[in-house]
Each structure stands twice: as structure tokens, then as C-alpha cells.
Image 1 (cartoon, helix red, strand yellow):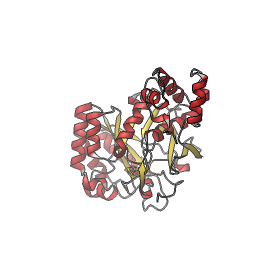
Image 2: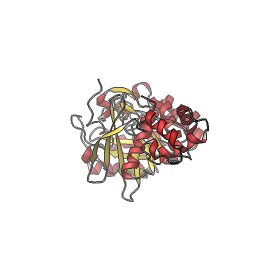
Image 3: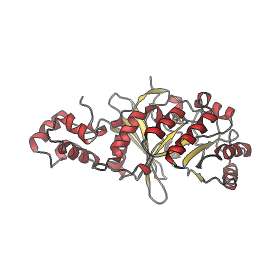
Image 4: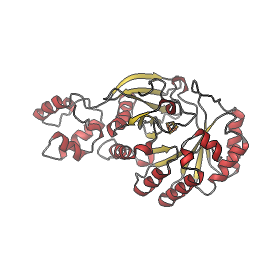
Amino acid sequence: MERPLSGLLPREIAAECGFDRPFRGTQVFKWIAAGAQSFQDMTNIPAPERESLSARFPSLLGTTVDGRFRDEDGTVKLRLRLPDGAAVETVLLTDIEGRKTACISTQVGCPMGCAFCKTGTLGFLRNLEAFEIVEQYLHLTRMFGRPSNLVFMGMGEPLLNLAQVRRSVEVLAHPEGIGLSLRKITISTCGLTEGIRDLADSGPHVRLAVSLTSAVEETRSGLMPVNRTRGLADLRDALEYYQGKTGDRITLEAVLIGGVNDRSEDIQAIADWSRPLKVQVNLIPWNPVPDLPFREPARRAVEDAVTLLESAGIPVTRRMRRGRGVLGACGQLGDTLRAPD
Ligand code: SF4
């Protein structure tokens, strides 16, 4: 099978297609971004070339949608079948103002093993290729209209697949194609400090979110195995480095789990730990996952956490509960997939 063109830049498409005029690569790139289904749609490509390329690339995309799940709150989850038969989920969230955000996966499964996350229970199969990342956005756009925001917060740890994430961002932000603003793209990590420093040094200069969840060493190590090798001091050091290079505010995500990390001393620890940084804290009440031994936080505990952080002078947002009806909310992805072999 030919290499799918959706993860390539215009000059690479020109080379892959054998065009002797480079602008043809840009034309094809634009058509793919515009949702063309085949070379036959590309009316500005000469007919003989369209014919031969259609034979070589019967489908422009390498992935297909083979599952579609819609929550009553408007959240949509798609299951994408990949060329090797593996699958990932991708989610479209729509907020109350109608703004659409694509929540994109970067790996099949995830090796990080966060205790509160469904994807972490699936194990890890492989990294996604750039075209498999870009096509999640293309499928969502074709089916539901163009998402204005993109977050790498689906299945997998993006900083473990940074080369393909970088390439997909280059494709998605390219002005001749989809042209997404880098400021509308967020990479979310569980705290891989070497990847955070790499991002600070070499970009892309997108927004950064970090799943902190607890600023108590023992609690964080229990919930997030990454903390056993990249502890809280290392993480804060990496974030200071990132902030020194970019000047950006960082989002700290805190998944609040009833009785585990939602007591006032837990929240105070987050406030104390965050103080040297320019951050905003996003509180995410844990979304239930069948078979995981946790409970949601009490509404009162979440309200108290907001009050405590605000009184410490830390901007705080509270994640709306969206997508739970289709297990498409934060930490729930993977129920439609079987564990990778
Ligand atoms: S929370 Fe993110 S990094 Fe942790 S197991 Fe789930 S997908 Fe992986």
C-alpha cells in the first residue's frame, strides 16, 4: 500500500506523487485539507495525472471511521480503524458557546499506566504515524465541521511520540492547508520532563498542559507511575525551564478523586507547589471508569478546591463534565477497543 499523503507537507507530496512541478504538491495538499475524498475530486490536476494517481491512491486517507458514538450533551466519539487493523478513539467536544475542540490520540494504548485512566489499563501497542494523527482531525471536520481547537489529550502520551506529533502539527498549522493557529493547539503530558525541555528548546510553540493531579510525592507516585522516575522537583524544574524559554502560562490539570487527592491539604500542596510558576489550574472531577477502584469527588470538595486555589491567587477553571454518556470524557477513552495483544 502507498504511504498515505495526509501526513505529508506539500513538497513531500510532490515528491511522493512524482510531480515535476512542485506547485502540484501544494494543490494536492490543499485538496486534502479541504476534505477531498479522491484524486478525482481534484479538478485543477490534469486528467491523465488524476487517473494514474487515483489508481495508485484509491483512497486519500489511510484510516476509516468504524464506530460513532454520540452523547446527549453533544460530545461525539469516533473509533478509527488504522491500516494495520489497530484502532484508536478520537473525540469532538462542543462547549456551550458552540466552540468545537478535537481531542486527538497519539498512541494505540498508552504505556504510562496512570491509575485513574482507562487508556492506561489497555497497555501499549505502538505510536501513531503523523497521518493517523492528522486524519483524526480530518474525519471530525468532514463529519461535524471544523474544530477551532485541538488538544493532544486523547489516548497516549504525546511526548513519547514527539517526532510524529511535531510533524502532524506542522501539517495541521500549515497556512496552505488547514492553517490551525499554534495558539489553538495544546499538548498535554503526564509530566515527561525530558520531553517538556525538548519542547521548550525545539517547539512547536503550542500551549502546554501538564497533568499534575497531586503535589504530594507519595500520592502522585501512587496515581502516576511517571512520578517515580520524574518526581515533583524535576517536574517543577522542567516547567520553570519551559516558562523561561517561552514565557507562556502553563495549564496544570488536576484529576480530583474522592478521598484520594481532594482534601484541603492536597489542594494546599498544589497551591504551594505551583507558586513559583505562572499557571492556571484546571480541576477535573474524576470521570468514572468501570473496574477502577475510585470514586468521584463530592461536589463540595470540588467547590472548596476552587475557593482555596483562588484565595491563593491561582487562576482556576473547572472542567465541565462532557462526554461521559459515551465514555468519551477525560480518562475514559478505550472502552470500544480491546486491549492490544
Ligand atoms: S492519563 Fe494520559 S498518560 Fe496517563 S495513562 Fe491515560 S492516556 Fe496515558
